[in-house]
Length: 92
Image (spheres, rainbow, N blue to C red):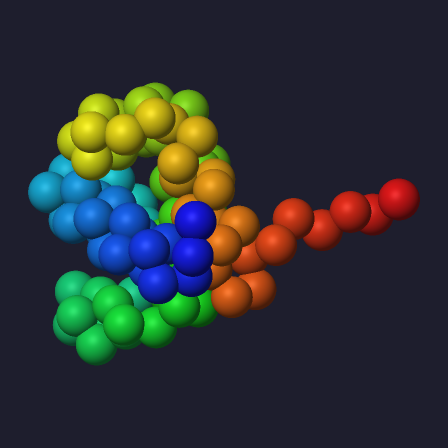
């Protein structure tokens, strides 16, 4: 997956999140963001990385997002890794 395709996928994931009031509310509270911030930051790779990180916190969100995006649940993690700064850190 290229960084560009990862950004497109992350925007789809953000659209899913925006349609789920419970998940959106939790994200806004956890990130300190507002709905206006979502619109303003939607083109930021760092913000999209945060969106994918948040979705990856809960297995059910991963499954729900994957279903809404019509993709394999692993795509969320792959997209995260493809975004700038999203590489998996190996501590050993």
